[in-house]
Image 1 (cartoon, rainbow, N blue to C red):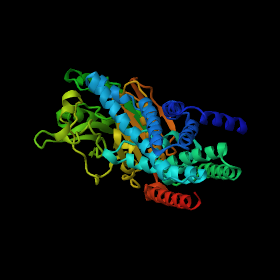
Image 2: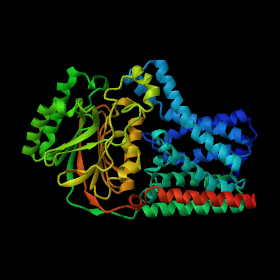
Image 3: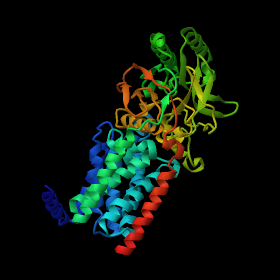
Length: 508
C-alpha cells in the first residue's frame, strides 16, 4: 500500500504546475469538512499534509500562490455565511456584500500564502525538520497572529476540527493553539511516512504515535472537582426571525413568546437563560415587562439571565448586555465587540459602511475587563456574548472564580449556513480549555448544554422554537491552560522554530 501511494505521488509530481495549483485549491475547499457540522476530523491531517507536499521543490513565489489558493478554498467554503449576514440580513446591495466577502476571504488567504513563502524561502530542506519543527511552528504562529490582528478573526483555526478526536486532550493544557500544532505536526509525520527515507519514516511514525497516545492520556486527567449540586438549566430559544426581531410592532409578540416558554419550564428549572438581545429594546424601555418577570421569578424561585441592550441616550453610552434577575441583580456588558456588527472601526474612513448595511444597535461601547461575575442559583458564572466565545483569553478572564460558563448569542445573522455549527464547535473548545460546563442559549440555534469535556449533552434544532433543558454541574479548580494561557505554547513554538532553522542551516 505504501509503495502504491509513493508511485501515485511520483505521478502527481510529474503533473503540470497548474494541476498542482488546482490540488491546492481543491484541498482547501475540502478542509471545512473537517469542522462542524460535517465533523470529519481525521480529514484535516491528510489535507494539511497535501499542502506541505505541494510546497516542496518550488519557488517561494509559487509556494505563496499555492498557499493563497488553499486559503481561498478554505474560506470561500468555510465563511461564505458572511455574504448571508451582509446581504440577506444586513440589506447590503449584492455587489457590496459580494465584494466585502471576497475581500475578507482574500485577507484570510493571505496567511497560508505568507506561510508558504516563508517556509520555502527560509525553511530547511530536510523533510523532517521542515514537517515536524518549522511548519507547525509557523502555521500556529500565524493562527495566533490572526486571533488578534485587525481585532482578530480566528475562525476555522485548524485545532477546532479536533474537538471530537484524541488530540483534543491537549486543549486542557495548551489550549486551541496546542491542538492546532498537533494537527500540523501529525500532517508532517504523515508526509514523512509516505515519502521519507527509512530513518525519516521511523521518526515520523514514532513521534506521531507518541503524540497521539500522549494526547489521549492527558485528556483523561481530571483537573476540576464538584462545587455543589447540579443545577437544572433551561435555554429558551425563541426563534424570532432576524428580519422581524427589531421591528417595534413585533416587540410584544417577542416578549410574550419568551415569557410563555419560560413559565412553562419554571417549575423544573433553577436557572433560565435567554439569548443575546432576547429583549430587543434598551433595558430602560422594558422596565414594566422586566418588573413583571421579576415577580414571576421570585415566586417560582428561578434565576434568569437575559440578553438585553443597556445604556442611555443622555450619556450616549450603550452596551450589549446580559442582566440577571430573580436572586441577585447585575449586568455583564460585552467586552470584545464584533467589528462592523457592534462598532465601526476607523469610523472616519468607513462611515460609508453604515450607509450600505442596516445592522440594528451597531454602535456599542465595550464593557470593562474588571466586571464582577454575575451570580445565579448562588453560583458565580462566567458570561460571554456571541463573538467573545471565539477568544480563549476572554473566557479565561472569568476563571477560576466562575463555576460554570454561559454564552448567549444571536446566530440568526448566519441563516441556514455552516456558521451556527462552527460557532457551537468553538464554544465546545472553550469549555474543554477551561474545565467548565457551558450553557449556550441562542435565538435561532444551535442552543446546547456542553460539559467540561466539551461534549454536547443536549442541543436544539436550527430555526425551531424550543427550550433545551439539562443539568449543569458547577465545578471548581483550574486547568493548566487557565493558569498558563497561550504564553507557554508561543514559547514552545519559538524554541521549535529556532531549533528547526538552526539544524536546517547546519545539515541542509
